[in-house]
Image (cartoon, rainbow, N blue to C red):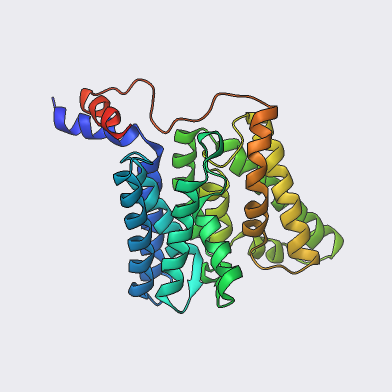
Length: 287
């Protein structure tokens, strides 16, 4: 009855990155309009310009397909949401490093690092004047509901639901054991720690990246458990800010070894049997 509408719906459901782009765009708008962030548009423009230009150059050289522009948008949004710096040049540097390593370093046709994670950590290390600010999100229950519900939509498409859930369950259990049962603090302290929007974005969009997480489902569960445990130790006993981002940075390259030892079917962004003819044509062109 409505062929154009059905075709658009099929296209939207054919690639999990469509959900990610819309979800993270909504999170960014939420921060500006409801959390009162100061929107430094030069920083955001620099992040988007860097990722899209480098990706476009890689497409022109035949190094990646046109569909990589979607991933570039996701990286741009991740940098805009999580990176804090006073100079747009640092955002541009983060974008160039993020996409550059993704294009140039591809063992086993996967990425060695999550692009946004690599760009953020690299700029923090190199500049000394950039940081990750989990506190910028506040701790409102509404934010957790938005991130959780939209994040589940993303994860259900990319089949990495257990990775994010494992990380959150293990980390929240350890935090509860320490805060409530060992230290004797109230549950509000534990809830405050687990209500960081940056933490939820990490759990639902970054650690679950199918191109930088193990192919094997059991190994993804063990991998997420290990990241949660190390993050807990670093945050509570060594007082490292945004510990999960640092742990992921050093843990992700291990996936190359894990995939060699525990072989499993690699992830594909596109569904094997797109419903609409237009989706098949687009996918063929992108490849």
